[in-house]
Amino acid sequence: MTRAPLRVITQHALTGAWQSLALPLTDLEYGPELNGPGSLSGKLSPRLLSELPTLADPGTTCIYVEEDGQLRWGGLVWDVRSRGNELTIEAASWSSYLQSRHDVDGELGARGPYTNADPCNVIRDIWAYAQSVADGDLGVTVDATTSTAKVGTTADPLHFNWWENTVLGDQVDDLVAADATPDYTCDVAWNTGRTDVIKRIRLGWPRLGARRTDISFSSGVNIIEDPEIALQGDQYAQVVIASGSGDGRAKRRAISAVRNGRLRLEHVLDLPDIKGTDILASRAQAERAWRQNLGAVDEITIRDTRSAPFGSWQVGDDVYTRIHNAWTDYTGWCRITGWTVKPNAPGGPQAVLSLAPADSYQYGGVS
Image (cartoon, rainbow, N blue to C red; front, side, top):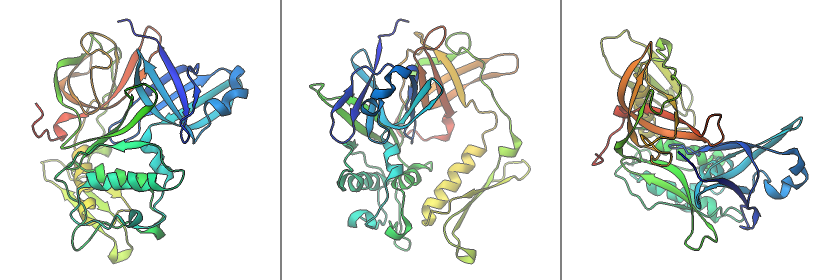
């Protein structure tokens, strides 16, 4: 399938001034992620080295990929480095910004503490606090989605203590890490007049994505490499012990365990920054569900075909997947947890998709 030309655009993150309307990156790879920022990487010609500070200044430059007039990816440049004649640029999308921000005032500037709170509201408060501080407004909007999930209890409220130097990004990760929690992904689009960019955190409840019956991934059709499928007993566990904050007998702990006719195998999940026992228990349950999947399909590489055209799927979608080779005969629903597009791959554009077992998720009205 023929794809429209791409261009890479850069913009000053604070002033909004455009820096480059066609940054000539080669070996470009980019894509989003479920409950994470996704990433972008590429290489730049040495002849542009003198102009680099105005084109892609790390830590204060937004970078976008546009195809056919639509923005496909957006984020912040974080790393620029050279080795010989090779100069590489790496970026991550909007939620990566919160990894460099802390709650320096405590309780998110008097927005907390939280008791029986919707984690969607807490996520919005985290972004509101981060962007209320001088020179901290990235211009990100967060969906108005609400959920029935709860964080913090009367006996154990969710606190944001300034003396703990809380990393705001870690707090968001904790709020979406369990099974019965909202999903998020980072998104980007032009505004109506195409004069500026809409930077968005998409929230989904009970989950992002849908079960897709109109597209599929199949060996010999659009899957172009045999994926590795690992059966690792040392990674399996039907008992997960989540260890939270505190020391000695005061250390918080939650155990999620089942009996399933297999030899008992245990895994310790170390989460020293988590103080809430409700969050700790949710994390233990989610980790156990993940570790009980042996032989899951984690990653496939596909080409652009009518069976699943690039751009036809979204983060969180379930797609029926068929893999057949000398060692594997797999069919089933797989959930897309992220992807990386390689527009200039040898032989034509490719996408490397990260997958998770779809039966680990609840659908709540999505069919």
